[in-house]
Structure formats: structure tokens, C-alpha cells
Amino acid sequence: MVLWSPFLLSERLRSLFRHLPPTNSLLRSYLVVEIGLAVPFIMGTAVALVRIPRAAVSTAILDTVVQITFVYVVALPVLAGDVLPKLGVDWDPTGYSGTTWLLLVGSVVWYAVLVAVPLSFLAVLLAIPR
Image (tube, rainbow, N blue to C red; front, side):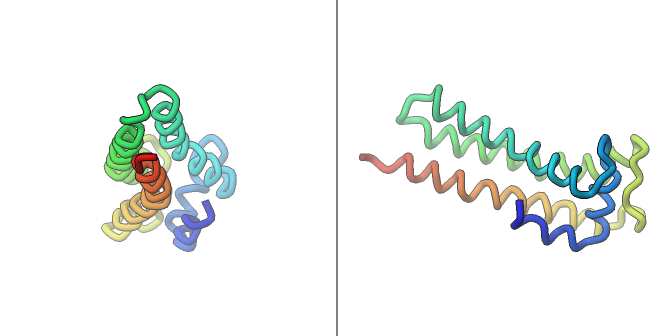
């Protein structure tokens, strides 16, 4: 996502993407992560649109967005800042300081907002009676 790419101005996040296996490439890792993180939102919305009765679709989409966003905001910074270094992927040259954690949480929150707002708008549109 182009709107999330300004976070790549941070050397720390560029370093994270450069060190992510299996590609060890900034661009390829960035694309894999961006697409991979969007899949649960897309699949949840698709399931809601196809399998949920029309009256409950809006609520199902909003539930999906809220749940995935919560998991991402909690789990992704922990994964990047704690789990990856323990697995030998040492990507932060500053030693995982508080600023790194703020950057991780901020970038995940911004990503979630970029995805959640359009899906929430879709859910509101679907809730309008016709």
C-alpha cells in the first residue's frame, strides 16, 4: 500500500523488511507482508458477503475488522520486536528501544486504519436500508 510506505522512511522498518525471511529483500518482503496482512480482511469480508444473511452482513464486516485490527495491533509489534529477535532475526541496530516499539505500534495502527476505514464504510453502506 502506497499510503503505508512513508513508514519506510524509518531505517528501522527498512531494516526489518530487509531481514525478513525468506526473501531478505526490502521490496519483496514489503510486498509479501502488505498482501499477507490484507488477506484476513479480504477473506473475512468475502465470507460475510457470501455466507451471512443480508441483515447481518454489516455487523459481520465490522466484527471482522475490529477483531483483526485488535490482533494485529497486539501481535505484530510483539512478533517483530520480541519473537523475531529470539528466532535469530536481529533487525534493529538500536537494540529495540522504546522508540522502536512506538514505531512498530504506530505503523501497525496506521496500517489497520488504512484497511479498516474503507471496510467500515462498506459496512455502513450495506446497513442502509433500500
